[in-house]
Amino acid sequence: MNSTLIDFHKKRFEWALKAKEEFLTHFTPYKVEGLSDSIEDLLHILQTDLENPNEPSSGRLSQFYQEADEEMSLKLKNYEKQIEPYELLITKQSSMIDHKKEEAQIQADGFAIEIDDYDRFLKQIELKNSEPDHIRVLVEDTIEYTPHDRKASNINEDVSRLQIAVERDLGTSILILKQEAHFFKIELATPLELPFVPPIAAIEQKIDTFWFKNTYDKALAKMRSQAHDWVTEMYQNYNRLLTSILYEITAQREQVLKEAEASKLAYRQKINILENQLVTFQKEEAELKARYQRDSQAWDQFREHVSQLQGYLIKYWLEFKEELQQDFLYGNAESRFLAAHYLQLLRQDGEKMIEPLISGGDE
Image (cartoon, rainbow, N blue to C red; front, side, top):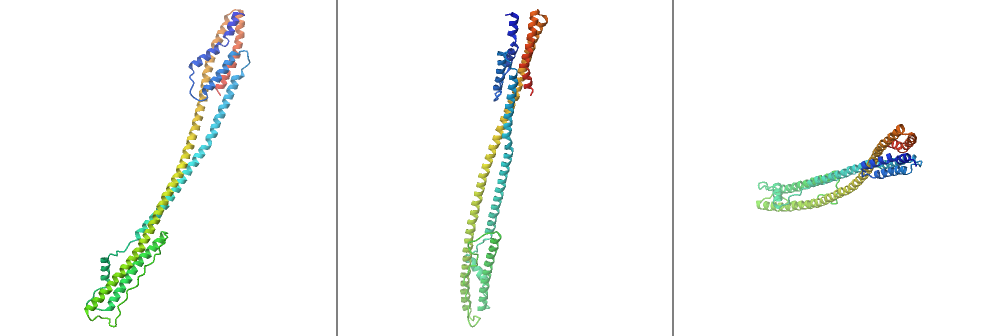
């Protein structure tokens, strides 16, 4: 075989091999999923063309680009479809959390108001001082000692006035408690009723006036003693009533405190579940966006590498073209004939290997 023909045939794809070697020398694969595989596929197609120069394969690179681009577009669109619901899902989840927090606050405020009502009611409960000395002063101040006006009617009137005053005082306190309980919507199991103690029997005698001071003193002392016992019993009964109410209201208040704490804990658990779900949604969205960004960047990097391969191919294609043109211009007749033939083949090879890269890299 003619040596010039052998040389031209041997060099036909040297330009592409040099481009491939220089590309691989400068190419450092990014550690991004899919990029290295795509580069390997590209080089495999190029190698196939180099190994089978006579096989019509001009569509392989174009088809490769089309399929790779369609696959990547489909992959990115799939990411977009997966990401799209998360914005609404996260917004809805955040709204649910805010709503639960508002519910919890309203519930807590309601319990706080109820507890405050109990506290205000409890402040109204004031026990009477049933100490003997305190009651003795009250009795002696009301049932006066009048040695110069020694009348049974005076003693009876003072005793009656004392009983009325005590009953009115205790009755007013009970009435106020009833009104407060109604105002604060507090239900009491214990009836709020004035305790009953039989009234003190009046002194009965035909003559109103005591003729002797000693007889007056004894009658006054006896009535004061009975009055002391009567007031003591009234106060003790009243205090027992209020103590019973105090225990009852305190127990109700404690129950409300427990319910408030249980409600707070229940809402906290519900909110924690919703917040954990929100974090999961946000994490999943972030992961999908990261994958989308990664694959999108990988495809951009792939295109960049394609453009580099394209540059190397053009560089060595032009060098070989210049070499063939020199043979065509300055060689002998045979060299010029063969150079013209291989220039035509070089053009076809360029169309097959370079142009698909141009169209693929510029999409």
